[in-house]
Image (cartoon, rainbow, N blue to C red; front, side, top):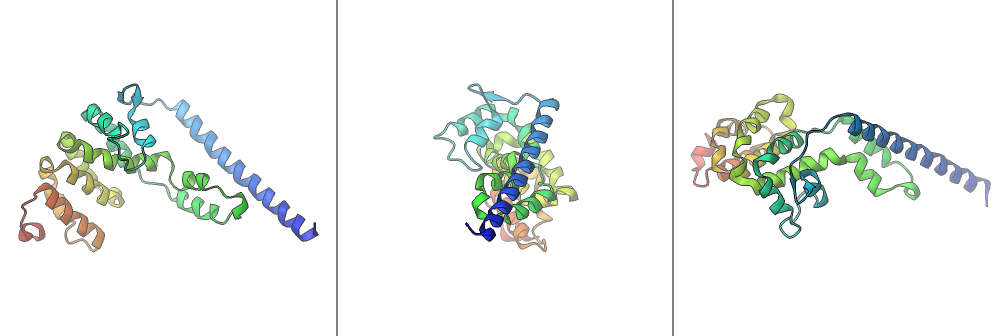
Length: 215
């Protein structure tokens, strides 16, 4: 074994140790926070919490076959406070930086599972899953319209505008009170948000004329 190879191998082992130490440290912090911070009791169905139904089935699960769809519908409005909280999550800047740094770790010691955890994490997964839950609840989620509208109006929540409109569209006709705010996005400089606004209006008012949408 050449000196150069032994040196390279040693560097990989040292780097691997640092990565594992960093990940372990993050896990310790997260676990400590979970243990020390009192959590509200989540609604349950068949002895399983709302977050478990969502996380166990992925962001947009087939759900009905797995039972998640029925679970969400049965929990109904009891699920809304949690769905709103999860939907409003915005990933901190350090996650992107950490994911980019992890991508530079040599392939022999890189783990896709760790990379996914660093880039997204539980909170991001729940945020994505909440979109699906609002589609399932449909008009039953109408009590959430005022809060969703406030989120659209809040400049600090602007990165979530597309997601919020998607949820309002899923609620349908009962979300009419949010139309003035949604309308403000129709002429957005962001083409994606402008498209989302048009789609959302059509979901809330299926027979809306083009003039009604574009005014």
